[in-house]
Image (cartoon, rainbow, N blue to C red):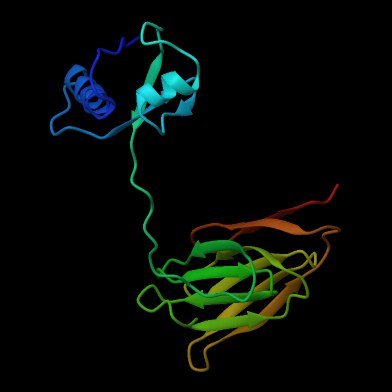
Length: 189
């Protein structure tokens, strides 16, 4: 528990951070945020005391957590609908399955346009996995599994096989690293 001395709120915040860094022997100092009653302290401590009807003599339990900066937006990948799944292939390509029923493969070096696309599902693509650098398996709300081969020459995904038998959406697919086995799970009862 920390009792607040009579000083400005900004000084208190600085002192609390310095106190935590000193107690934890942090060098260089680390930024912390503070919580009171499991809520982030977003105002000065004096404003918190006043808004909660407390007095300067009140005992307040203050917790501290690492302060993380707000995330910065990085490169974006445009899709016409919601993205349901994202995976990477062994060669580092980024694969996405989308609610527009399309599978897309993207190069990490150029996210402005997909390298290739696969169409064939009749409902949103919920899951995707790489079997090798050129083979992809996908599962969809259309209750099917589809196996695809990346066609480097014409920037498409060619369908190789369709697996039917699920009575509900295919929610997850997984493969062995060597591509020898694959598994699927769904909402079937």
